Amino acid sequence: MRKTDPKAAPKPRAAKTGSRSATPPSAPPPAEKHFLGLPIGAGIAVGPAYLFEDQTPDFTPVAILPAQVEAELERLDTAVVKSRRQLAKLRAQLAMLPDEGRAELEPLLNAYLQMIGPSRLLRGVRRRIEALASAETAVHEEVEVLAAMVLAVPDRDRAGLRRRADEIHEIGRRVIRNLTETPFQSFAKLAQGTILVMENLRPADAALLSPARLAGVVTEEGGTDGHTAVMLRALGIPAVLGAPGVTEGIESGDLLVLDGGSGQVTVHPGQETLAAAKRSSAAFARERQKLAQLRRLAAETTDGQAVELFANLEVPLELPLIAQAGVDGIGLFRSEFMFMNREELPDEDEQTEVYGSAVEAMEGDPVTIRVLDWGGEKEIEALQTRGIAGQVSGINPALGLRGIRMLLRHQELLETQLAAILRASLRGPVNILLPMVTTTEEVRGAREVLQKVVRRLKRRGEELPARMPPLGIMIETPAAALSADALALEADFFAIGTNDLTMYAMAADRGDAEVAKLYDPLHPGVLRLVQFTVEASLRLRKPVSICGEMAANSKLTPLLLGLGLRALSMNASAVPRVKQVVRSVSSADCARLARRVMEQSEPEAIRDLVEEFAEKYL
Image (cartoon, rainbow, N blue to C red; front, side, top):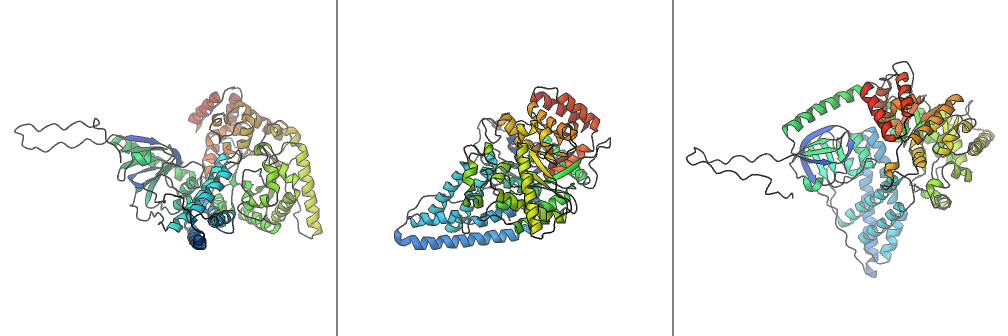
């Protein structure tokens, strides 16, 4: 409950003697309160709050007697069967979700199911029960150990590690709920137009939300890059996550205005705030309709320069969303998902089918498949069982045996993947992309492996395309960018990965709060690396694209065009807005912006120029 400040409201005055009525004056309306969180799902929501309290049981360690071990193991088996049944039922409901939500949740549910299959997690839980821990205690302790091990990995992708640890915690909570027969939360009875307020919304619970009934979501915890955030965006629900104090400062029934674009939540809004929210909501609806109309229009500047817009793909279930975005192809097919959450590596036939299905779905548009990019940060059990993981992780995985270095050391992985890509290329145009390249020797080594695989497939009698897929490289390190002219003599195309390029150039991990502010893609040093790469590729007539987060930031689109880029790859949801910007600017104006930017020495000055351009032209 909120505490009321006795000084906040004046005491009512006594009625005048002889007055006709002694009715006390009405209390003044409560003052507006504001909370700020992370903007997740764009849009404005106005409605009453519903404060949802989680019923997860508190944990208390309990020991058992030797005679109880068998019964506890049976309880565990029953809870696991029940958990698997619940997850299977939830997976059956995926067809009702939007494509992006389905693409996000299905791999997650598969990971949950694998964790409560013949897994390391359950083997550890059973050992703890046999060591005289209750089933609940064993699950809790094993989950905490595994999550801590994940978070202890020295990795550049801290957000990814946190998501993985959250997945382990979530499946542990589900099993414990079933062990204790604690009912799961239901949102089915929420009133129409309610704004849900809670401490933390989990991905599987987010999938149960109805956009037709729910106006918005506010949580105390959560981030912009988690599964829950993706689910809420896919469902089109205005949302603000990670807003400190909301569960203490908001009560059920309080009127809220939620701005999913700015991250602001207003409690007890006044008339002016409500009027502004109504105007913003109408403007947002108009903008969304306008962007939807761009799908079939060409990405072309006002002076006729064509720009190719590609989509990044994490898992095949994103393909319907990509098809709806009006893209020119897949600029980055991340293949790591096939290797994760499994004990055996995917064989050539399995990989061929996955790649081939994606190629066919694009109906003649090119698909650029990046071979396995792994360096210890992602938990791939199949590699660990083959003894590769220990060789790769090292002291600092970001600077160790990763990407193409690891694949050239373990060529059987690369050979299998290249064979599958070559076979899939019979179904449509395909490009092969090598990760983490820093030397010309690595490109030559990979090309030799590719030629070896071609010879082997021919001996096997496999049909191959008349034209071999182009072999390109990621530009992710300063060394690669600064030797782009030499690398262009070996590679068929470039893809600039600005996320890693920024990290390596600035020697700063954006997941590390102590140095995150140094991670700035608009630092002059990073931009010069991009410029050098683009100029080298243009001189040698090699295609070049950009596929980091910079590509999805529509405010940076004019700068990227001004630097000479004509191919951008991003998440599918960002394509309409970027296309709108492309169609609003001229290449000449973008070139002038780039020249001014490259004269600057401070990131803030560059940011000001970018903002100034956006205000003038966009």
